[in-house]
Length: 104
Image (cartoon, rainbow, N blue to C red):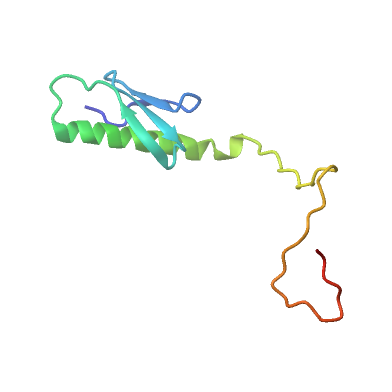
């Protein structure tokens, strides 16, 4: 079996092997949060099943590395507070001076 025969689709975060086995991931292709394997082909040992999943995740990560520079990233705008933000008192841990009048 050729473990490098993967077709990767980054839009759906999935990869399909030439034998028909399919995996889907959640999160980033380079560091997925979860991997959802499909049904394994009949006659595969557990070692071959693990190898198939591992090479599929690696194929997704490699494809994501290739496409890193292809997507332009928009700059994040600077934070501007809303104009109608209410004025609130500030909390201070400094001791009050005796000359300052106390507020009730």
